[in-house]
Length: 117
Image: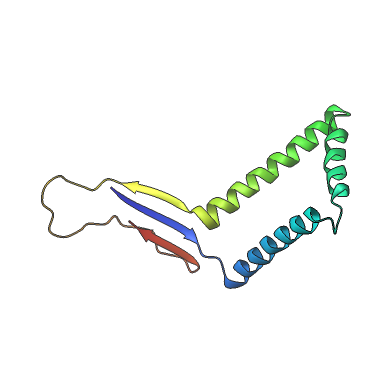
C-alpha cells in the first residue's frame, strides 16, 4: 500500500508565533502556580459564559453554536496545516513489477508538501 500525505507548509514566522504562544502559556501557568498572578478572573469569565448560556434557550443556542464553530475551525486548521490529507492507494498487480508505478497526481501548489511512503 502506498500512502500519499499532502499538507500545507507553515512559514518560519508561523512556527515562531506558535513557539511564543506555547512559552506564554507555560509562563502563565508557572507564575500562577507560584502565586505571582491570580487567574480567578479568567475562571469567573468562563463560568459566566456558561451561566449566561443557561439563562435562556437563545443564549444556549448561541453559546453552543459558538463552541461548535470554534471546534470546526480548530479541526480544519489542525487537519490542513499539521496532519494533512492522506490517501492510501493499492500497490497494483500482484507479482513482479520491475519499475514502480505511481498514480497521476495533481500538481503541487507552492507552499504545500507531499510525502509518499
